[in-house]
Image 1 (cartoon, rainbow, N blue to C red):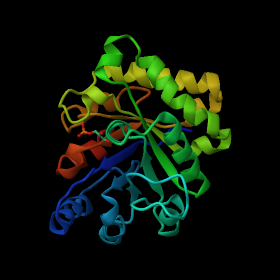
Image 2 (cartoon, rainbow, N blue to C red):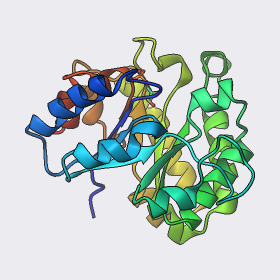
Image 3 (cartoon, helix red, strand yellow):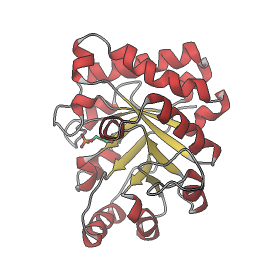
Length: 250
Ligand code: G3P
């Protein structure tokens, strides 16, 4: 079965006002989009439910993070069970901003992934190397280490609940998108790794999407790569060009 194209909009800590949120939703709701693409919007947690209320129903929402526990004395955290209970289907985990700024290790990200799946959520699992790691020839090694932590705690059947987002850190928010060859190579490596350590079926069916300076201008060529199954979009997801990115396979 072909992998369904997936486009996620990661709003990060934007927009700053509820009014701006409505403007973005209007653009999305009015757009003519490819019905074959799964679209998932991840606003700040504060806006997830209100955005879901006004967003077209063929789009889904996601949280940008969740904790490893379902309840308890964890001030400031949000639990996977709470998200599931609120009808939120997806959560982004392991984004490089969380790994770097909030010191999340691959082990913590793996625990979060497991907790999310156990609660009934699907995870958009972000992985990717820094420029320094790429220049040192460690790209594959870094990606495999980040994935291995998740492999250790995930049953084969649960890989259908994971979308892997390959986001090279040097491409995030920099305007320096990976070349089609770099993206295809990394995505192919991820698939080979899944084939080797999980199963050929999981390697074949798991969606591997690309993130990092995706724009209306570069999405078309990237989307043609055989192992690029969609995008996780930051900055451009707040702009009208996000519609072009959703439609990049059209
Ligand atoms: O999660 C998406 C992201 O990190 C990419 O951000 O702004 O480079 O599209 P951006």
